[in-house]
Every structure is written in structure tokens, then in C-alpha cells.
Image (cartoon, rainbow, N blue to C red; front, side, top):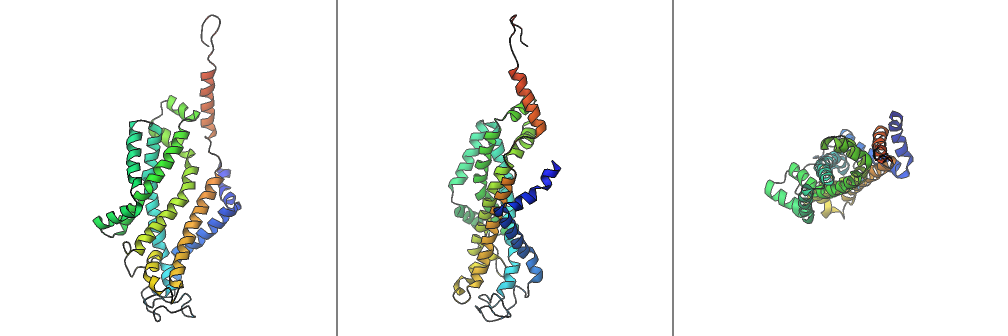
Length: 305
């Protein structure tokens, strides 16, 4: 088991999409977290006239206030990654819990939870975000909660569907027969076997979170100037795109690379996990329980054996 886990990363890198995604992701994360260390200028320093084209001193030119685009690009990635990760993690924490409980219980609780999810799913994402920001203020924590609420319904439905399939397996029924608690069945029998489904869905959800946060920053409802953020940079410099297109293209390219790389890496890693199957010990217990049920016969004297 340890050897298989150690070989999982090389298997990921042997998949072309996985190798490309992991390489791009490493590049983007390096820019996001190491960029502030190597940035040549302060994010608020004026280094030239507004909208200056790239030159020797300013490789990506200047923005609408004459600040160095490269320095702001190198400083603007950490917020995107951190807030996107926080929103996606919060959405999965709540969505996976709802999906597991709803898919396993198959009772009135399932109907109540999923109807509430359907109501949330019917509301446009932008409307939810605008209502929260209008009521609670343009704070970044409000934006993170709003993006998580937008992502929650889709995650809950995906996890519920996977749980409905796994809950009918023999090893799950054997755990229920042994008297295992619901929490134990969910965490030890069902959850490990829906991880590939969650990972395949993770890349898309993270990409949507990043785009939503960047969109709200673009509308001026997230981070406020002079903060350096890729979405905010696109918003600030859209009127100067004819003077220096790199002030808009550079952060847009970084956002695209981030979303694509996470999607490719998560999807490839999910494929390296292969088809989900119960661990050998659980499979043996399930097979033994199934064999015991099927070996019940009736003798000529009417005695069961």
C-alpha cells in the first residue's frame, strides 16, 4: 500500500495532461507566492507615465496610474489563490456533508436537504453575491462565503449521486449489518470510494471560484485599490487597453493558466486512482458475509444448515 502511494505522483506525471497541468500549476503558484519577493518595484510606486508600453525598465509597461505592471502582477496572485481555495474548501466542507447524509439516509431528510439545495441552485450566482455584498458590505470574507454558497448546490448533488451508488455495495451493507454507526459508515466505507468523483469535480469548482472572485473584484465589490489582484488589475486597466494591452492581458493569462492547470491536475490525479474498490480487508469481510447468506440450505429433514 505504501509503495502504491509513493508511485502515485510519477503516475500522474506520466499522463500528458497531468504533467502539463502540474507543471503549469507549479509555475502559477511560484509566481503567486514567490513573486512578491522578486518584484522589482512597490505596487504603489509610480515608475513612468500612465499606459506606457513595455520597455527595458518596465517589461510589461505601466498601468493607468503609471505603476509597474510586472510588480503588481507578481504581487496579485496570492490573494486569488488563497481566497479561491478558501471558498472552494468551505463549499466542499458543507456540500460533501449534505450530499453524504442525503444520499445515505434516503429518507425525509434527503428530500428536505435536496429541496433546500434546489432552491439555492435556482438563484443566479451573481444575484446571490450582489445581495450578500449589498447587505453585509464589500468585505472579502463576505465574498468567500457567497462564492461557497454558489458552489455548494452542485457539489451536494454530485456527492449525493455518488453516495447513492456506493451505499448499495456489499461492503457497505456488511458494515450496516455489523451495527456500525452512520458516521463510521460514511467516513470509512463510503467517503474513500467517492474521492475520485470529488477530485474530478474539484478542478472545475476551483476554477469557477477563482473566476467569480475575480469578477467581483472586477466590479469593484471585492478587494479595494491599491491592492494588487489579477481581477482588480483587469478592471482598473480596461480603459487603457489600447495604450498598453499587457496591463490587461497579463493578469487575464495568469487567471486562465491557474484555472486550466488546476482542472488538468485534479482530473489526471483522479484517473490515477483508478476504479474505486473497497480495501482488501473490507472486501474479504463483505465476501464472507455474502457467502454466509448464500450458503443457507435446507436438508431433507427440514433443518437449515
